[in-house]
Length: 461
Image (cartoon, rainbow, N blue to C red; front, side, top):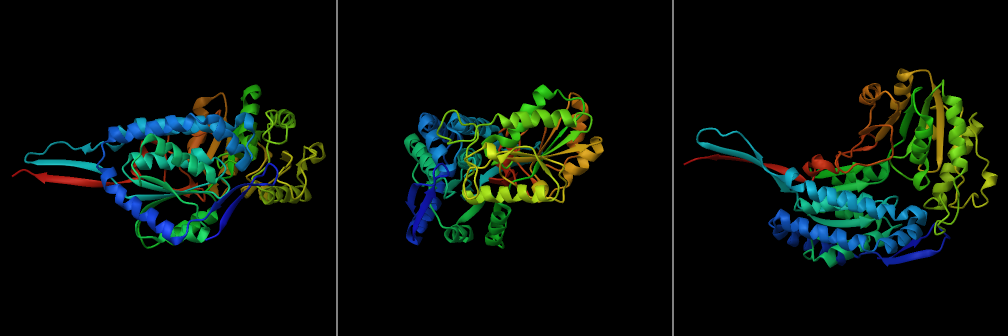
């Protein structure tokens, strides 16, 4: 079936090679998942929680090893790569802890002669397609709650981060999870589409591009199965005139540049009240200039490469096009010797004098660039923030929390923040609107997407 090669953005070397699963391997995995699901759904919730908790224990015990592999697979600086293992643990343990309440039967008031209640039934086999940018945390969002809900799981990870699927498998195996409850496959795109079309798949969770989400919908069409699609964003932040810039600047700029801007909920557009605009831009540019672009295996590096040269060149193109249309670029790329066309390394950039006609302000960048615009008031900020095909998250920075919450209610986004950004709380529903996708993961609500309701209407004899 062919060989899958992972090219490290660190130095362009082949870091991992894996044989893609052939049809016989795919068939065996599907059959094993179906066979394992019936006894797993009958396994007590306490036992499911025990095994999933043991998996987390085994996983976090390899923190340093996992962090280094992450750096070489997708380029995140080693100084912060270990944080994702902590994020994996937090999300997994949170979903395990809330499962009992989320999956509990809904008991209805008694009626004479009748017993009535609603249970949450597992869907069956869940096919989870995870991306490379936060490869452990995006996978765990779906994997652990799906298994806790009584489903079996097949994970297909990005070709950029195949070791992530294997390390999760290793942790589940060490925990003693029954065979077939969690499995992974290295698949070509065509083979992944075939799995989605397979009648044995009852649920698909996909995190990735809009085009990828459309692919899932096409292949799942007509089967009436559950699909969860998290497709990225062009997330905005608004700084009101009353903000404390000492706190707001590092918060919003880290939200824009962490992981080299390769975050679906990263800040890609900033709107600033005109009265503090010049001060904000000056501070923002100073903050960006202290970033150190370099080899991510160096502990002193704070800005690593993008995932591949083509991704960096895409963002370069957005920047060059904006500057040609009148935008001002505040960072000199010449100050970053590694940043060259055709390289995965890209100098960070701050753009002003931008508008929404420019691609960099309406097309997802997924790189270390942000555009900043002044606004006259809250109404203009809301109009511009909502002027997007995406709606994953949005942030408002203000000392007036009541006004900040009122503004947040007007924003077209699945998650709204005040005075923070680029964060996922596992006890809150993770969802998007418009081209950011549909469905929900995490939180108690997320368990509803991994189960179906079953009503019991029992008349007493």
